[in-house]
Length: 103
Image (cartoon, rainbow, N blue to C red):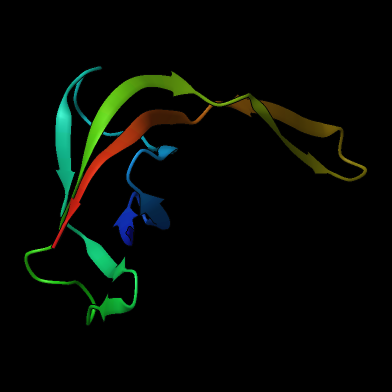
C-alpha cells in the first residue's frame, strides 16, 4: 500500500515504514502527526485518485528529528562595476517516518 501526499508545496510517494525529509514542520522528535492532504491511495489493484484530495484519507507519520541541509552559496555580480555579493543558505527540514496509511 502506498499514498501520494502533499506537504511543503511538494508531493511525496510514501509507503508504511518509509523515511523522508520534508520542509520543516512544527513539533518535536517523537510526536505523531497526521498528513491529511492525500492525493492518491493505492492498495494493490485498487487505486483511488482525489480531485484534488481524497476525503477521509490520512497518513500518520512520526517526527524523527529536525535538521538543516548542506549550505548552498548564492553569488551575485554586476560586470565591470566591481559589485559582488556572496550569501549562504541552509534550508531547515524535518525527518519523518510513516507509521500508518488509512483511507
